[in-house]
Structures are given as C-alpha cells and as structure tokens.
Image (cartoon, rainbow, N blue to C red):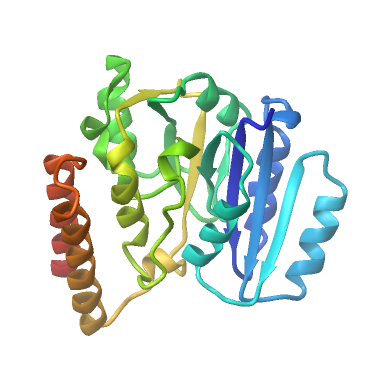
Length: 265
C-alpha cells in the first residue's frame, strides 16, 4: 500500500537537491510505502539528465515529471494530480529531512489528525541553527499531545513540515495567480477539513535552508507587494464568506492579518 506521496518541485536546482534526495533515500519507512514525485518545471538540461541518472540508480519509487511551464504552484498541482499516497507531504528542493521523518509523521497521523515535525532552520553554507518562529511554536506546544489545529496555526503558513491526509485536499489546488502567499492561501483553503494536530519527536526533523537569493527572500517593488496583498486578502474573504459554517474565524483572521503585515513590512 502506498502510504505517502512526497512532492518535490524544482526549478534549475543547485547542488542542494542531491542532499534533499539523499535524505529521502535514507528514510526508515519502507521504500514500498512511499513515492517521491519530482516535478522539474520551466527548464531542461542539464537538470533533466542529471535527475534521470540519479533516479536510475535509486531504489526509491520515483515519479519524474518535466513540464515547460514554470511556477512552483503549477508544479505542485501537477504532482497532486498524480499522487497515489494516502497522505501528502511537500519538501522544497533546497531543504532536506532526517531519516525517521516519514515514518514518524505516518505513525502520528490519522484520518482526522495531522502530524507536525520538528523544524530546524539553518543558514546556507553551514548547519548552525537559526532562530525560527515555527521551532519556537514546536517547543511551546509539543508537551500538550493531540490538540486543535488552530492552536498550532504558525505551522500552516505553508504546506511543508507536516503530513496532510489526501482526502483533505481532494480536487483543490494551489492558486497559480499568486507568486507570494499562495502557500498560506492553499493551507487556508483546505483548513475546512482540519481537526487535530500531533507533534512527532525531535528526531523527525525538517531542515529548512535559508538562502538570501531564494524566491522567499527576493525583494519586490512596493507596487507588487500592495497588489499581491490586496488580491490575497480578497481571496481569503471570498473563501470564508461563501463557506461561513466551514472555516474557523480565528484562523481566517490570522491569515488576513498576515497578509496585511506582509503589506506593511
């Protein structure tokens, strides 16, 4: 049975992608129970050949997809269309995970409970741990066991660092109109299915690489920031207003406030 589909979108990957894929090779979860879907988007050589060569030597079950159209949201959507797993987890191509990552996430998940891991942020070039608000959330809440999802809302600014039951997602996808904030919007979109969360041990680690030239850290013009934030706020309101009985108001409020904070930053 296919327990987990691991989705890794990539665009002109650097050397860091091999660290990401190597970490999946070392998983303690049986290789019969997870697949890795790599979507190479908007570029071809030499990345296509390099990835094909790597996959040919691997015992992990890979689904390698190449598309001409760029964009991480589009890549993730295509991967979701092909995913066979009962659960979905996302890993960015410049990040990597500890050996027990998938196994512990799976052991702590159920049809109504999402497992959350231990996040570890580090500077590109060394492994020194950086202060990270999501790590602080883990340290604060890990002692409480199973708990309502909105109490751990800092984990839901993006799709990584967790195991999502595929039934939560169904046919809903990332909104490709947005270049920033689409991760948080997607997590809010599927939050009508959220109930409980449970933390793994500190051994199940998601290592988040902080790179100054990555998409998350590129500077945007004030006009771009204003336009994107306004569209995001309107998207949140539209989802919430048309489904008042499904979405948590507290969670909705924090998403809108987050978009406003981004606008003012």
